[in-house]
Amino acid sequence: MKPNDLPYNLPDAGGHFGPYGGSFVSETLSHALDELRRVYAETQHDEAFQAEFHRELKHFVGRPSPIYHAKRWSQDLGGAQIYFKREDLNHTGAHKVNNTIGQALVARRMGKPRVIAETGAGQHGVATATVAARFGMRCTVYMGSTDIARQSANVYRMKLLGAEVVPVESGSKTLKDALNEAMRDWVTNVEDTFYIIGTVAGPHPYPMMVRDFNSVVGKECLWQMPEMVGRHPDMVVACVGGGSNAMGIFYDYINEPGVALVGVEAGGHGVDSGHHAASLSAGSPGVLHGNRTYLLQDADGQIRETHSVSAGLDYPGVGPEHAWLKDSGRAQYVPINDDEALAAFHTCCRTEGIIPALETSHALAYAAKVAPSLPKETVILVNLSGRGDKDMHTVALAGGLSL
Image 1 (cartoon, rainbow, N blue to C red):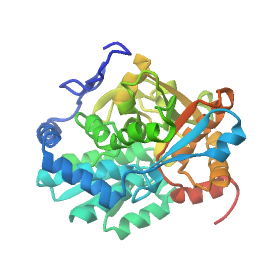
Image 2: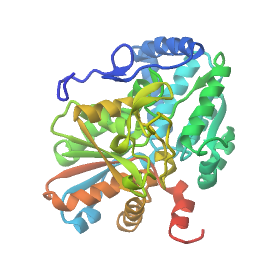
Image 3: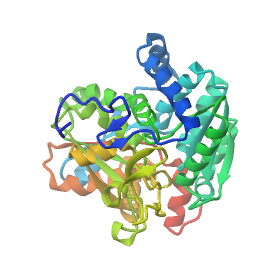
Image 4: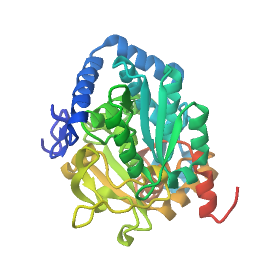
């Protein structure tokens, strides 16, 4: 498929987005994934399943989430008009609950009484623990000890909801290592356990399935933006770690060639410093966690350590659909460093009265950077992926303050 061929219909039957994606797993997991693909395909055409999913989104999550015009910030910048898609207003405080509900319903359909998850910033862990409580499932969440230290509030929330939180001490003790441990658990307990993956990565069908469940975000924008401003936005901006937040809003705009798609990665201390998590900006293709995609790796294919002030972006890879969107030219990916994200965090708080997640703050920083150079009639839509309650400790430390 060429970059602008329409309609967009990836992945193919093997879970490939061009040369990316696929399923690189052990034989034990291969059988489990075959079953998952079969059951998920059934749910896509099951009206009762889809009705229950959307009923949960409406009455449990609180969808649709609104669009908000950041009018004061736009005026201060003196250029394009910036709008927020308010995923921070969802139950649990982020977009993650959209796909965890969907996956939990699939798990129930498959007769799996236990769910597991990995988490970095803790939002996916909280969302998984939430739906496990909602549907009466046992829940175990793997989380790097580094992230546990900087996301203690979310750890407590998971435990309140009945989840077991398992600290991971290997590697960099962050998201990559948590995912490794969750995969090991799944291999060992595949008969009664469903792995609720938190992003659009992993073996097929996870990149497609997570995208599909979270695409409710973009589908709402397709009618909300014309209702609010009379047309589609000129640009959609979203932060990218693994990429579920961005794919959720990008997907339904891929077939709208007049809408620019911009994914914002964690530039850390700067891409040239080597201390970052910008896989698409500075990585190369390889295989990690069951799929082929862009990775941060050395000349021998060993995964490099990453850094981001934001736990949710601190991952050395990215979903394979983003890799294809980059290579095809349909989406652009740019890095924003820690200092820029923190500055945007504070500006959003003081100008709009909204405390954004540090992940989202990367996207906000990019929007604020480009808005002044664009005409005032230009419309930028930022996916405000979550709220920043979880980041108070990190922001306080970065500012030399104490809580």
